[in-house]
Image (cartoon, each protein chain N blue to C red):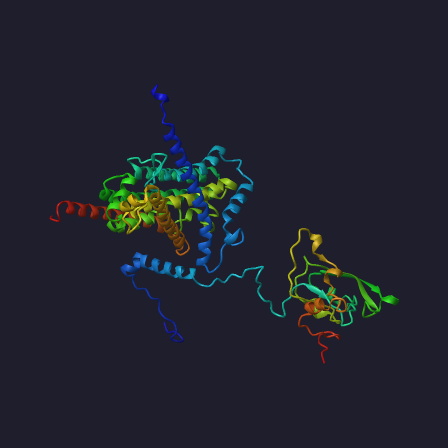
Length: 188
Length: 355
């Protein structure tokens, strides 16, 4: 039949030569190839001594952010909880009292903030939804645990270290992120 | 009282030799599992076990301990006696082959000459053959007692594969026996020490014997009876814990002892190549030579075991009809032709190359 282009080749149906029918030369050739592979460089990575580098946009565990003065950014607005497709985030709001201005940025803050890591699918919608740049996804995995209770991460597990008390921890956890205090999409 | 005059030293000597041979076979089989995984990893560009002990050397110990701690499951609707008998027969026949292999020349201790072979029967190689044939029972009984149609299928395939390849192996061996003129393994090794190795006299026979040895030990490319993706586990899918360990172990012991038999028959056994054994025995003493020869024997066996593993991780598995085709329609005529050719050449040789 007429083909459109002349790239198609008819199937070669030649008879095997005697040497090919014996299969032994081919077997020996194959064995030489596998023998060469013994002396090649191995592609295994010696975890946990070496780790593979992550890309900067890798979506791992969540971290609750603070600003430069050490005040918590989260205002318990609930946008992340609404945006989460797996309903993993729960929170309880509280009002900032008189002597707590150095702890919280605005008058409303999250007294209890829990993420259920067993439900979380690490999609990053909470990071995109937050108007205060208070939550972002870092590069760590969720470590293993023996019971389900250990996977409910509270505020103390998620908060970034205070830059006033622990500047190195803060800087390490922040990485190369640029802070957008007015939320994503509002960069000037 | 002639019944009570047992030679106790002889008995003790043989018992110690038996225990040593069995322990060595088990140890080599244990580390064969480790080397299998390491070599498989190296061929596949990865590292293999390297966490249990330095370079992963304690990995077989960890595997053994794991197998011991697993739960022993015996299915209710099967014959308990046969279920336990299957792996027992497999392991027993695997180890019994080691009784007639000459491991070295002789040691000289306490004024006695201890020959490093448990027993030098006149029918050496025929005994090996008989034991290998009995090994089929281990697989068949295991498959039947599992009360599982897939195990039964696997066992039937394994049994038919083994008996098909035994024929070609036997006939290839007959050609070799025509040349050596004796069945005893030690005599064969002595002949190879004095003259050429048998591999040069019977290259085609060696090739056929090698392929049949792959089929007898159920090694790839002939391992469809334990093909995991075809029959889940084949005849050992219902086994757990140490009975499974016995089946897997029996395969490695078989592999080790088949290599030993092949080295003995074709590659000179414990003969050190390009080395005048007799002259050095006089100068260095019997014990040193025996140890040296034992080391050389093991080096040759290790090369063969490496060959077994190398082939396993290179060649894809045979289909059942391809396997039967190979055994009956290709290897058997080839072995017969080899035998006829060998016979013709022997007659010519005896007739001083006249017709």
